Length: 296
Image (cartoon, rainbow, N blue to C red; front, side, top):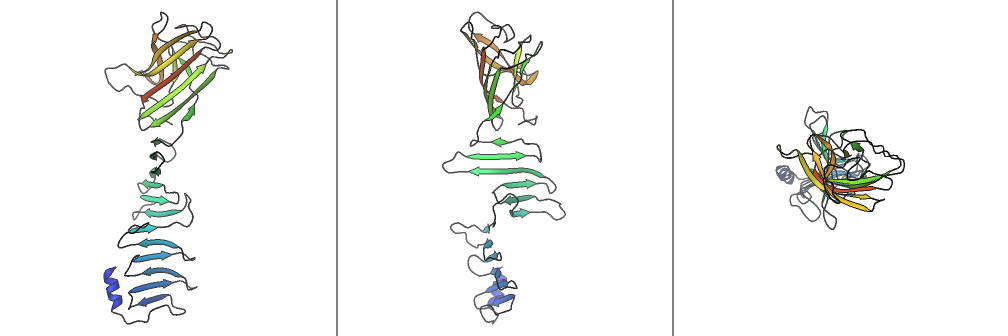
């Protein structure tokens, strides 16, 4: 660019636009100005910041290249007239590719791809008084989001299962839970309050996880992941236990290790008590998700 400007300065041309001209060279000030048919400036090259500028038909700046960044401007500045996800402000495409390698849209989302498909999108970066938030979406149609702070928990209605017998049927039971994913870490809490039309099924109980977990160590058959509270409403009895993930089925958790009136073993249709109307189980657990499984 500097060599072009130097050549322009050696020209002896009148400064300013002449009516009807599309390209104007100013050898005195070192300018190249390009106008459209209506006389609006569309492109300009100058020896001072910004050295290269592009305008729309309304005179709004679309792009600028600066020799020295200033306040509110970088080496390259791109402005999008309308902020929308379909307005690409910046894109990079390799010759021969059908798709983009990199793009920034009007909402500030950064997308990257392999020239055919979009492999991922960084949909938000926040700093200031808000918590730092980084959300990354992988894949074209299957979400595998990683979010650090800034988002609410996701509601989830888990299955109440049996691992060794007949599944219970919840009937009019109240089942509520929520979870949040922090990278590979999942925080999950909820409760089940047995309804009058529920049936208990048989065998040992388990509760579905919102996304499968993992037992980290090869020689460990189960992994304790959090606290469980059970209440026998009719007898006013309470028990505390711990939730664990079994390496045989990492899509659910079971309960054992009760602290309460003379009970041991696993949570089941008969232990530590036989569930009846208004009986309750609540849990608060933290576990490592299995990243080999695409989940919510």
